[in-house]
Length: 106
Image (cartoon, rainbow, N blue to C red; front, top):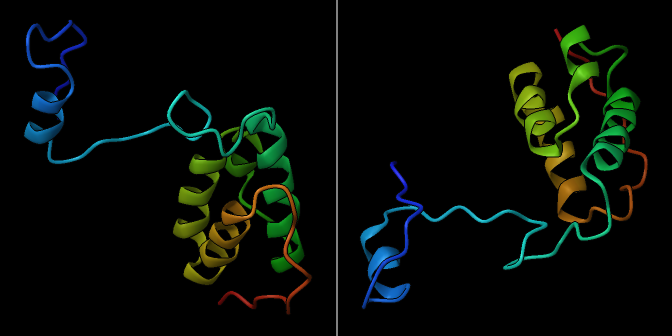
């Protein structure tokens, strides 16, 4: 999808929004403030701790991730079950879900 950052004269937002098949919103921006005041690296550290409650170790590349959404994507590459746990935690970002049984990856 190509975005044109220039102003749209005479049609407001209705024109670009109706022509766009997909609209992406940032969760700590002016439209949605789910993570406002809750830094992405802190959320990611909490997600990493949750993941380590589920599996013995994470691939080294996952330790460098600071974006919660990138961490979710990397979790999905590791295990669908792990990604489900991470996604559930993202849906309630200020509280970690209660401890659940460890996953056994094969």
